[in-house]
Length: 410
Image (cartoon, rainbow, N blue to C red; front, side, top):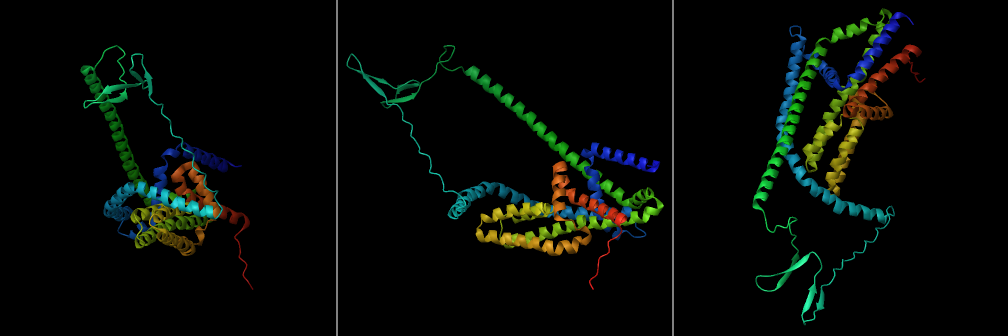
């Protein structure tokens, strides 16, 4: 192994170790890469000979962020009202599902022999209270024994009643101590106010820190994405200079393959998310599904995660439709299945293209591994990373075995 290979091997190991150690602060850099990759085609379209790329980036930022802000401003009041209504109605919906749909489903399953018959309810044994004991006395009167912990006291309008016995104070003092009661009440009130004030202060501090961190990360991410888009050619030229001159054509071919795969996965998945969300909103509104704006937003966001996201977003929509009747549930489920068939048979081939095709087994494997190690962020970035790895594998396989030649039929 020559010195060049040793040098690059040591550098690669050092970079990998640095990334592993700094993985908790890599989120802005990863998001910046995604934003730069998604927005760069728009920036190149806006860029003109007299307009510097920085100006084109600023225009694209203004248009994109302005559109998002306008959408949030127009939709936020409706979403907030829908969320409030959903919080109020959730107990009613849960009770409806528990008391109506679950027993009906269990009855049908028992009729089919899938579930065993219900067990008889346990017998309720009423507690037997001991009777009052009446004993004759020597003087001809009667003594009544009502047990311990009780006493008989006269009523104002005649007669008697049985009440719990009053316990005497431990120090033998009878009656109340107003001064002590007031002092205890004041002390407890002050302690309660102090504890709540500290808790409120902690909550306010956490909210302020969270908002400040989110604003800081958002600003840093946009700035990093702008730097990446401005210096794209320099970055690619630097990595190209690390390759031997005779291998630079192969390097360009590898970058082109990775770009085709990522463009299909990243940009294609974003377009499919918007289409899924729009079609879901149209269908849910036509069928009169309750809280359809929230469910449409959930479908749009969850569609960012392939396969699992589509399944997860379908469950709440169908469950909520069940509370409105079987026909509504069937219509909603059929609409969702139609959207997924459209995505699988038309949107994926046309938008993502053949270059981004990844086997479903690899998609599921990458999602599970990404979620296990990096949670939600890992699930979002699992498929793009798998696309890069697949491009690397195909590239080096062609370098070793040569390009495949498809046999043409006679």
